[in-house]
Length: 116
Image (cartoon, rainbow, N blue to C red; front, side, top):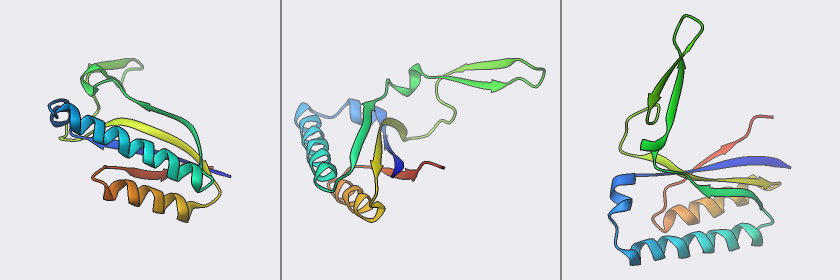
């Protein structure tokens, strides 16, 4: 059984300004995704939204054996990772098809197999 990380990027500032009905539509899309994963025999190990990227702390080596801390994400971009799924699956092709259907409903998703 392999594990896959499904990253959920989104433009945080735009998402925060969407009306409640759009948030509800997104929740229904996630619920459908959960059902499709279960129907395909894929196991959600854990899934979670993330706190806003502005609340992140990035840490880098400072070149002298210490650490430089920076408020915010490593990169500044329009889209940030706002949540994730960790999924176990024996059928990568079907998992990919589930992710494609999720994306076809207007969702952003990145599928990555965990290195073994």
